[in-house]
Image (cartoon, rainbow, N blue to C red; front, side, top):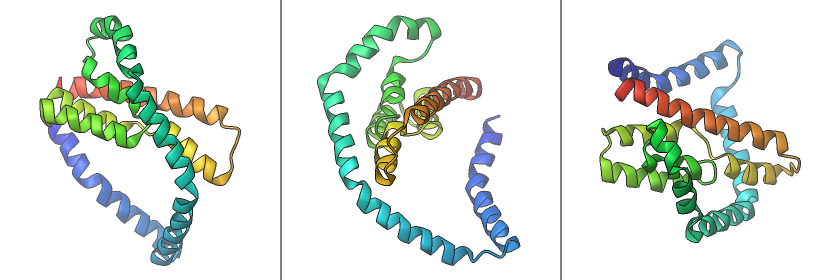
Amino acid sequence: MYNMVTTISLWAIPAIIVLILLAGAVNRVPVYETFVEGAKDGFDTAIKIIPHLVGMMVAVSIFRASGALDYIIKAISPILTALQIPAEIVPLALIRPISGTGALAITTNIIENFGPDSFLGRLASTMQGSTDTTLYVMTVYFGAVGIRKVGYALKVGLWADIAGAVAAIVIVTLVFG
């Protein structure tokens, strides 16, 4: 199973790039020019999102500095013990929908303390890749294009994050546990 996952990981990105190039060639789309045009739009979007980005970074900093994360982990620790979920992974699962940078810092800390080939290192890496920064995306990108009604998108995004975190725990336990 481990060798199969490693092989898929090595070939997934190059295969996707080749598929995109082939689809562009089949549909007679100028792939490079389209890429450059998209990059220009990305620059404009980056300028628009700066105020939203600053606001989100302040909110995340207040959340972490307040100690609320520690209280949440203490409150759910009996459930984690019953489900045999390592408590060290919970901060990553909670921060990941809020802040990619904060989640990366937690993942780095887990990998430094437990090693990249440890169960926790693999779980943190998988969870980092299988969830998204939902609140960050909604704040920054929805704010940049002026979307105000975000209720359904928020619910779906958070459910997707929960599904990604649970899938990461189950799959890493099955493959590496």
